Length: 269
Length: 318
Image (tube, rainbow over all chains, first blue to last red; front, top):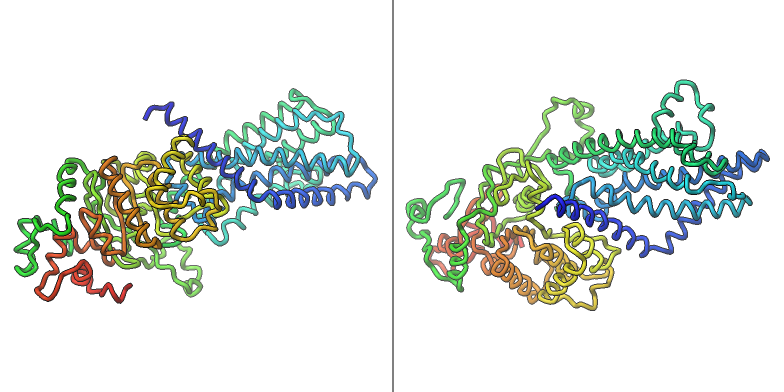
């Protein structure tokens, strides 16, 4: 099989995951609306803390924090639960037997998550802007979208090692992946400035891509920063992605090989 | 060829290895099986599957782990294991339908998983058309497909959506896939009006038909069927069996099938292996195996062959 043909197969394989996930969202559209309302309400609740201080800038700071965290955690969960979900459906062996690369399977799943997450974040931002009468006229939405897309790559890289956890332990693997998320939430300055962290925790925030995503997103929405203004942060996020994706794939493949020695892929039978 | 307790015996040698009353008549013609042997002869120049000395051990999952406490975390802690496959040697010729019969837990599904690249053997090698399943799993996956006993689907999606998804993963265009699965579903008697229904609303038999279509759609060179007709009514079973023959005859597909159904094994398989406690205890054509069981008391059947090699009564098992 020539290289072009193989690449085309990988591409259509990735599209297969996107189509499948889109069909699943369509099937549960009512629940998606319910989930969207829940997320918007949760974000509004957090931003209301800012209202109590009377500081409008703090409200916007929290609104951006809630939206970015919603997007990044959705993406992280999609990647890290790729395997867990297929185990639950019983289709994991089938997918692992398919003649496509593992990276295609993982990227195909996350490609849908990025599209879905962007639409969802835009709707939540609109709902919150309406609720708090926020004027987004000065925001640079193009920069915001580019920052989210580039950040997605770094988050995919961080989610890959977590994706293998359900193979290692079917019952507790998913819960263990939440430890990663909690760590990122703690150190990345989602709802408070990084300066608030104790001195010994601050160095960890430097290696979290969410730190740079939040900083750039706040600059784009609160100050109308252009792509050139946030280029430095984008470069750091891209660098983290360049390191974390291959490293994440390596960890995933080691986990998969271990599972194949131990017979951990089978659900039953 | 007959394999018994690990000893391979050529057809000429079987007479000396087995008592005269058990001696197989390899030229016997039973229910048209001679025709299948012709197909076998035509395509025997290359091997579709070769398993050599395959051993697979699993750790015994102790329900009372706490008893062993922290010792389990010690890297040199010796874990208790059992052998799910013990020195399995199998050669399947291209274009052959090869049956594996055995009881629950005998190692049938484990062997299928090893061929499917889902499980690595602890010892031995498995090659699919000369490609090692551990060293080159990507290449092997392009040549195979599998139907498992419990057909797995995205249950909220329709049969059509599941088939389309599978087609994408196997590099088929939706149009080609649609044409192919429609033909297969028609041949195996699936009601087309149900193709847009969510899989969770289909009966077990209907799900199994969709699973069979999904595997056949990709026209694999080696098709692995792990009890594919379980849950199907007799007519559907026959439809699937006929379609398997069609695939073999028209597309040259090699098929390895595990089954509990002795009649099915006898009807469709060119050769049959009996697996017991992870070992292949007998192998041959249905006619050869039946001849071994012939002891002058009534009509010999594959059930009697099974009892002879495993000491287990098939009736009790069923």
